[in-house]
Image (tube, rainbow, N blue to C red; front, top):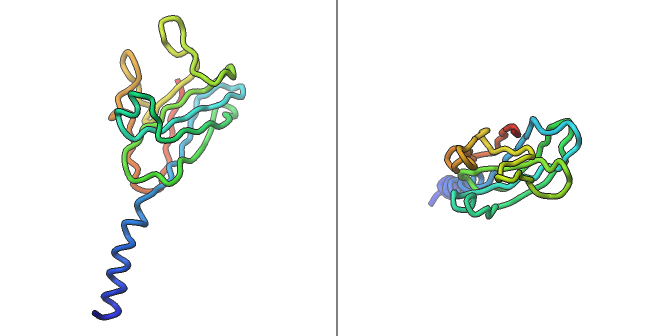
Length: 138
């Protein structure tokens, strides 16, 4: 086999490795004006979202209602991000007596559900390469 053929085969074999992981940069807006902690979780399946079993989670301080962070080395696939701004510092999403959130929350794609959280398909973003998304808290 010629050297050029070997080099081509090696280059082709390395190609899937080059696109197998990506960084997802996330910007969240419309948070509280006062400083708050933003909690984010990323899910890779509908089942994981339904059972609240996050692939990864992060928290970051919101400043002037905005926060940015990066989920790194994600395999190519579909993901949902859910988040909430902890406005009172108790590390949880507070709800009223009927179970509706009283702190700001949001999902990727600005997805909204009916009588509950949005479906995985409504909130999912396809990650094929490094990319950035933005969504709002409600």
